[in-house]
Length: 520
Image 1 (cartoon, rainbow, N blue to C red):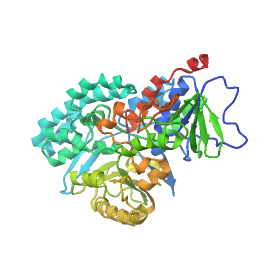
Image 2: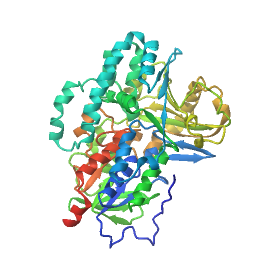
Image 3: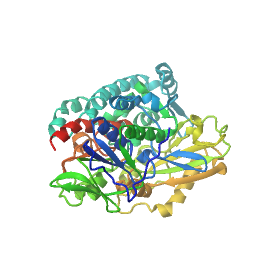
Image 4: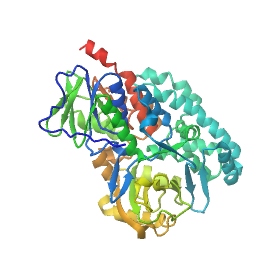
């Protein structure tokens, strides 16, 4: 399913002055902004989305090149229920708009010694895999699963779906944090349950997919293992881009408008209240509320120009800890569909070090010679991503962000790092580079320019304990009335389920349009 979007033209008004509905402007068409727009439409607002890219999805957008389609960011759904609820709350049927494919196994992890570990949906098969590969840690694994479920109930279904904009919201939850040892790290918790270093890695790497250092991210995030077990891992046919397009379709059916290739220069503020936005070409859109799906760091540093900020000052944001950067190599290989039969949809390739590499990335912020890689091969599941008989891949490697006194010069190092990546990949998919038909890369400098992500961070603020819940930028601005925020940098955090849930939390803080109209 695809949709076309009209550009803003000089002779077309941005808003209808006779429109009776209260108006909402959403900055950014990422999954958070699209979720917010859908919820605002269901609350009776006339919604307009503005995005600087040429297509929907933000970090979940795609690039089509030489007959290949590459999803640029997230590749899977772990909690489809958040989307089903979103569609249902808006009066639509998710299953009619989006086609999901359940993956099994979810992914395979490979180590340098030749060992591997696959994660399955079926519980019997999963337990058998653990007994085969890590027999001495079987009982510890069972305990770990119970730990994950407890944190899921508290952290995802409880804390993650509640507003956290008041200090009392946090204080009420402190007993739960204490009971569940939120002070312990994800890696620390895994290490307390299992002894094999490989298994500790397999149970603790998940924070890297939301931008966190497993050695420091609160153990609340082991709940991701329960999300996989309870809801499975799914691929969207057509990629996450198809999901974003389907969300845009709902917005249009609600009467909203989407304007692409347009940048917001400033959030307009009138007597302490957000009153609209100013575009980079000087035109303005007036609105009753503004929702920013731009990174909170960018929103507060660059879009609020004339108002004094009390909490999210430039200094505060500069002192915050930001997620790591990403180097991603996208490539299409011609005629290789029947090659590399042992390589599935998702493969995690470990370098010779785990904690040492994390230290280089997050602490020393140096570009190490070794690396770990997430290899995505969607053509295993969806042949529309590549020409017949061919493959589409992306290989992602965590790297330091740009927040350092001597950031990596990617113009100089990009090709060198890609060559190191090629050598590692050649052990998994031998001869792949000889068959490459099209390719491109993204690095932290691209994340800064394309997504306006501070310091080129891959996932906004790192989800440490004192950068989560109340400590994270709130879904209702602390600086400006009628300004709301959604997305990875806000509560509850990064990752598709949390990004979509951020709009659910936002909707609880925004009054229905009928209230706005009665009190205007």
